[in-house]
Length: 80
Image 1 (cartoon, rainbow, N blue to C red):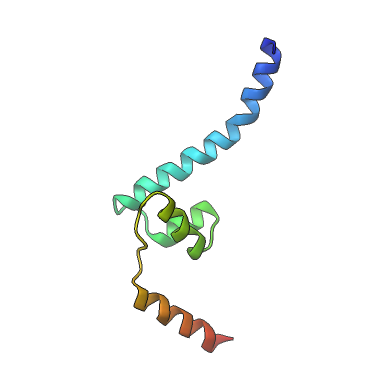
Image 2 (image 1 turned 90 degrees about the vertical axis):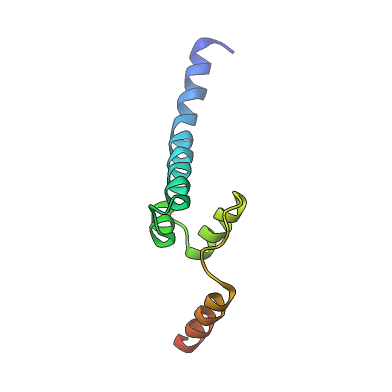
């Protein structure tokens, strides 16, 4: 690989690194209590369920209880 190929490969990685950095920054903000789960979800472009799964990947417990989850499911069923 020559220098020009290295530059192209590195520049292609920049957007992904920026996105990963933003995700990490938001994870820290959420963990420190400075970003709600809704804000985190919106910023990451994920559903609440996806966001909770994403938090679990980093060992951050779900910010809702099992009872809250069941109540949300029941509410969703009534709206269908």
